[in-house]
Amino acid sequence: MTQFQTQSPVLPATQNDGFTNVREILAFVVAELVKTIGIYLLAFSGALSPLYLWAIRIGGHSWLLIVSLGLSVVWGAVVLVLFILFRSLFGGVPTIVSQSRDAGSVAHPGEIGAFVIAYIVVLGVIFLLNELFLASMYVALGRLLAPLLGLAISTVGAVIVFILFLALRRPMVAR
Image 1 (cartoon, helix red, strand yellow):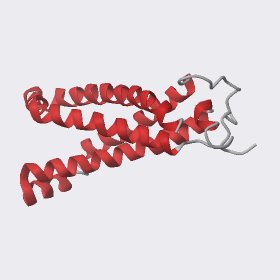
Image 2 (cartoon, rainbow, N blue to C red; image 1 turned 120 degrees about the vertical axis):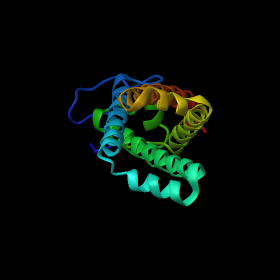
Image 3 (cartoon, rainbow, N blue to C red; image 1 turned 135 degrees about the horizontal axis):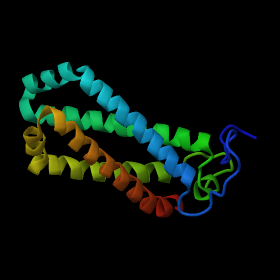
Image 4 (cartoon, rainbow, N blue to C red; image 1 turned 180 degrees about the vertical axis):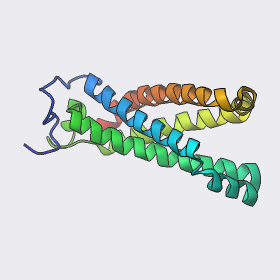
């Protein structure tokens, strides 16, 4: 038994056939929670304020957007890595992934591509909505309620990323 088999060394055996499974969903939720907690800790601590102030001084709104996109890409990579690790630990690697290459596989390149595409699409939509009207909503809500709107948008975005990922995974892993 390797550490990367589809069954968890800690949890009892489970059926991983099908589109997805509870353990895979749980792994994604835990990865998103870690990311969200990390983002809010950094935001409320002010640790990223110097970076944002530098971006505004250097290039105004366009540089602020570039820095925000860059940080979002970093957080997406963090979620992907955590998701794959937690899914393996929880024994939630679906059969479609584990049988696509070898019995010890925890991720398939097509699956990683599906996640990246899903994340970029949702990120693009969120940034577009932010430019169109969400930024003014954040300002209108103020410092107390704006984080709640951000949390709601992040949650909806995460759900859409996961659904889109699942929809893209099957055809991309079958290649």
